[in-house]
Length: 214
Ligand code: ADP
Ligand code: ADP
Ligand code: ZN
Image (cartoon, rainbow, N blue to C red; front, side):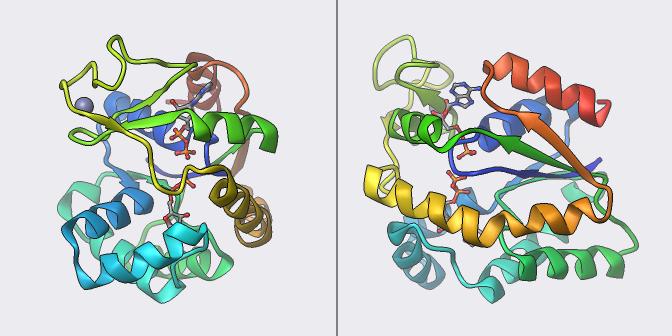
């Protein structure tokens, strides 16, 4: 199964990708997580990426495509993968197309998770992530048992730098202007499965299962 999760920031891509990964045993490839790891490691790429991320802007296509190309060539991707947060522009979508053609494969499903902007602001402002294992919480909708501590590993929970209201607004604008056009691109290929992302995490998971038949 080769699938793409598309949706605005806060739609639940990461949350759902983790669930599908556990169920199907295929890797989650989150470009956001990869860039945050590069920022944490203080690599040259990380330093550059941070400038864009802090503004709520997209990292240049060449950089992102290079990173994804390398990741998809790893053996764990041979049986399938879930792309979370990539592609985010038409240029990235067509680069991915070419990349997969070269290795004789293609995307099976493009799952588009729809959530209205007002809900997204609420979701993103309450999002907390485990510094240690990357698991995601929400202070209202999915709180940890002990505030600030990860249920799974005891790690410290933190709020992302870009989950502040002003940056959130920029990220939403960026999504509508630069990422939404890829939905049309994949629609014309008959790959798009639209999901109402406003239900509970379980409801959204069920809806995705139904659409992808797995
Ligand atoms: P969210 O899904 O909450 O919007 P991500 O973790 O996917 O956040 O992305 C965080 C930031 O990382 C983005 O705002 C952008 O700056 C950068 N980024 C992640 N993926 C891409 C991509 N495919 N193309 C360009 N920039 C990206
Ligand atoms: P994305 O990867 O698309 O940016 P996340 O999966 O990180 O989104 O979800 C954003 C925030 O919203 C997180 O705090 C998460 O716990 C919460 N969340 C995810 N799905 C739902 C849902 N169906 N209902 C309520 N909150 C949700
Ligand atoms: Zn943890």
